[in-house]
Length: 78
Image 1 (cartoon, one colour):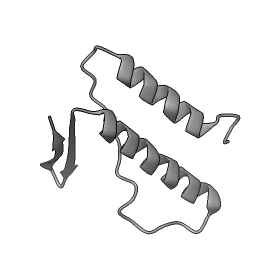
Image 2 (cartoon, rainbow, N blue to C red):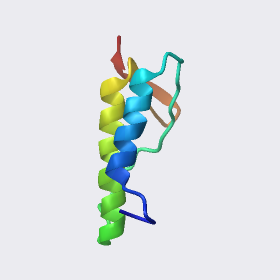
Image 3 (cartoon, rainbow, N blue to C red):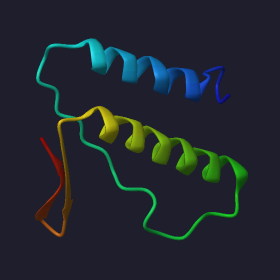
Image 4 (cartoon, one colour):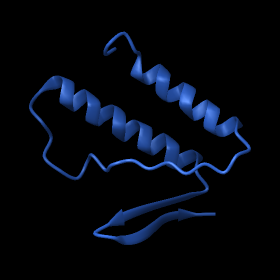
């Protein structure tokens, strides 16, 4: 829990809202797991939660793309 917010619960709530939505939704996020793992516990906790969020959203999404150096790569497409 950071700043009174339970991140795991917030992730679950967001994922549930995404599952229930009929709208076409585009989410954009930074990739946080390709670099050095920080020594600080709070920073590692952030990275762990960001990775969990990315995995859960990718599971729900019909399409997942990553863009590196301006080059798109489709990771998942239905």
